[in-house]
Image (tube, rainbow, N blue to C red):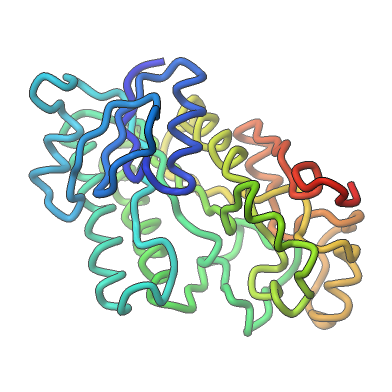
Length: 288
């Protein structure tokens, strides 16, 4: 499939992405500031993504490690608001993403997939969404500095693809990433605990599937996709959650069972995305 550099390949989502891409024939290089877990099927080089020179070299080839790169998956970031001061979060994330986009362009790499965020949809939804299920059709509504950075990244991607119409920059608006050990907490969740993102989540393995499908798609230009699990974190029917907690929000279509309120229809239609891992299928004794 070619060589792909995965930034942040040592992180929670990154580990799943590296494994999945390697399993599907990609030659994977992990660049991160944190070493990978033992046995990861990728070469590793420590790279500071806020240094444009290091990023340019990482996307061109590093000494005897590798030479030439076909695609980039950019996942590295301070992953949520509040982990660092807001200015530091913005300076790290936006600068790193600019450097990845710019270095890819200089290296002639036209296949770039990166982690945007569900937060651009208006999380934590203290101001209700314009309608449900939410989708990619309304303008971004950042409510934190972290989310503002992701909105800036999406705007940058629009212009990078305007400069090179043959390029593909796909932003995946991942929901809250989960792995098996996280699911033990799900039965204790209340509606109020998780209202902030419309009770959504994404299994890391399905996030990795979305990355691969985006890489292998024949799309060009900038596209954004919501990437979420097919269900919510609760057993309450989703239509009942909306009626109780967002009674004045328009419902654009029938909502079936416990389906996600983070609309994944576009990803299904254009990428062929079909999530297969849910907390109910991974947690023994959960009602499926």
